[in-house]
Length: 97
Image (cartoon, rainbow, N blue to C red; front, top):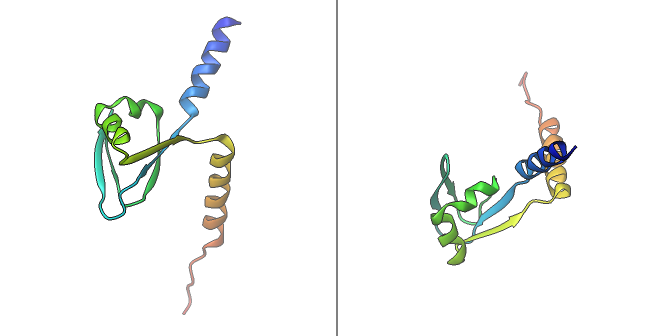
């Protein structure tokens, strides 16, 4: 049972995301994370894996106030999924004109 609980905990942690926002209002930023790089436009927000916060470049940007980071709550993630599904089902192409 102990192995099962730890495996579940690891899956839950892996499923959690963090939201990162570029706080500059007039310039994009590019920063490197494990496995690649991320470009954010002014005030753009993106969900990333928490492991990306281990990057020295990201930690510097957070300390300088350039990036704002907060955890994504399950309810927020579910609401965003619902919104994206509604938007995708609400859009239909107009043909025949």
